[in-house]
Amino acid sequence: MKGLTHIIYGMGKGKTTGAVGCALRAAGSGMKVVFVSLMKDGTSSENSMLEKCGIKLMHCDRNYGFTFEMTDKDKQEITACHNALLGKALELAQNGEADMLVIDELFCAYEYGLCDKELAKSIVSCKPENVELVLTGHDPDEFFLQAADYVSRVESPKHPYEKGIAARRGIEY
Image (cartoon, rainbow, N blue to C red):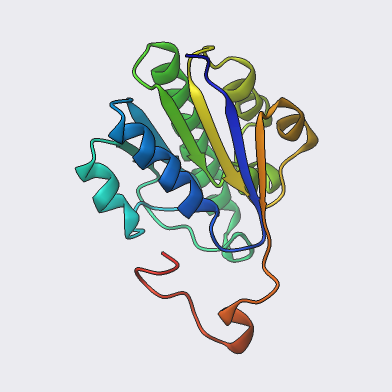
C-alpha cells in the first residue's frame, strides 16, 4: 500500500483529535503506529488509550509551557528534544517499525524555530513510500501543503476560551 501524507491544521479544536482517530483506525487494522507529540509532555488524556491500543508514544519529558513563557534555556532544551524525537521517528519509519507516523504539533514547533526545519522537512521527503504520515499544527509552511495528499483545515468560529473557559481535562487535553 502506498503511504500518503495528511495535514490537519488550523486554529480550531480537533487537530490532535483527528490525528488520534487516524492512529486508532490504523492500529485497529494491524498497522504499527508511532505517535510523536511535539510541544507536549505526554500527559494528555488520550495517551493512556493510545498505549492500550499498542501505539508507540514519543514526547518530551517535561512541559515547557507556552512559547511566550519559555526562557532561552527552555527553548534550547525543547528544540533539542524535538530534534531527537524527529530523528528517532524518521529512523523508526525507515527501519519498518512504523506503518503510520503521526507528528502532532509539528507546525507549531517549526513556525517558532523549536525544531530543525530541514529535519522537519526530511520527515516528508525521506519517509518510505509505504508509510502513512499525519502532521498537525496551526500554520503549515507551503512546503508541507504542497507535499500533502490530504489537507484538512480546522476552523474555530466559536470557542469556549473566548468566554474565559479554560481547557478541560478529558475534553481539550
